[in-house]
Length: 201
Image (cartoon, rainbow, N blue to C red; front, side, top):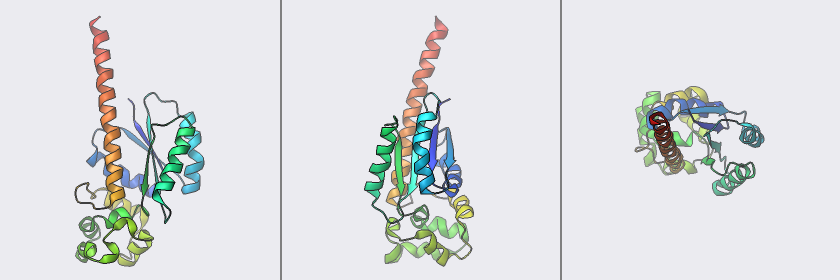
């Protein structure tokens, strides 16, 4: 069966997606491939796109922005995918970091860490636009001293939702993955029709 391969900057994103995607995009077959930071990911993209021999596979590249220009970074990564023969690769940027997605859903954050006061974060000017929070992982550690990237990803992966999250980059990510999933459903349906037709001959 074909699947979606997520090429990720870090392990914590893998942990998040393995809790998130089965809930929000059920029945999507996927594999998460984490890397050891941005440079490792960008060096790996050409090799993996050229060498991956799996019929029908689709790729999604996910990288933090870390204070850069989201549009410029996305265009550069999309160009890298185009150069290596995979124009159908979906590129998504977490602005500024993965943890900005947590600030996009204060209720889930408060529930994950049993800190009811966190539900009021969205009423504070500095957190009103989660994608504009600078160094959100460090900011989160100030609010929740026990926060750790991997355990936090596990907690939030089981709680984040599409409808209640007001991070634009999170919603763009889910929307893009849903479009890929629809393409898979269509392709699998067509393959099933062809197989059924052969069986009748």
